[in-house]
Image (cartoon, rainbow, N blue to C red; front, top):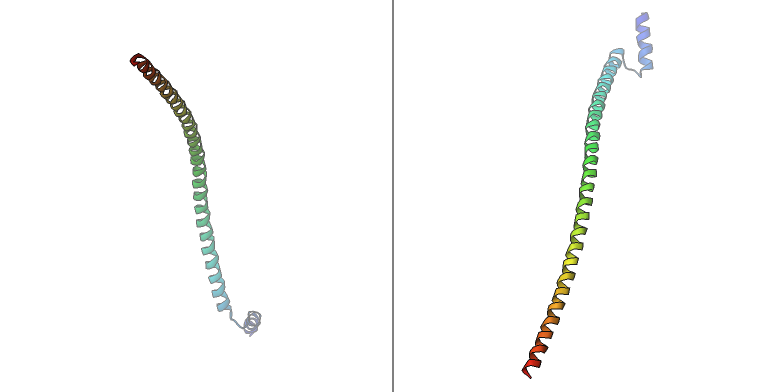
Length: 112
């Protein structure tokens, strides 16, 4: 009778549920917590992998920026060399035109 009274008190405290229902609920809750712990561990492993990938990508980005800077410098040097060649070409063309004019004047003078 004492056990019956205790079971009724537990049932009253548990909102009318008996001890086996409470036990099942506790087991279910424990399984859910274990699954959540497994999920947390899985996500932490994935996070670790992602952090390593980010670290490697940052290193690659630094290298890429260095390569881009080197190419920019080479491009600037090539542009300067190109401009110098164009200037020389323009100067040579002007000199050729002056020589041509001079030769034409000489021809005109000789023909008169």
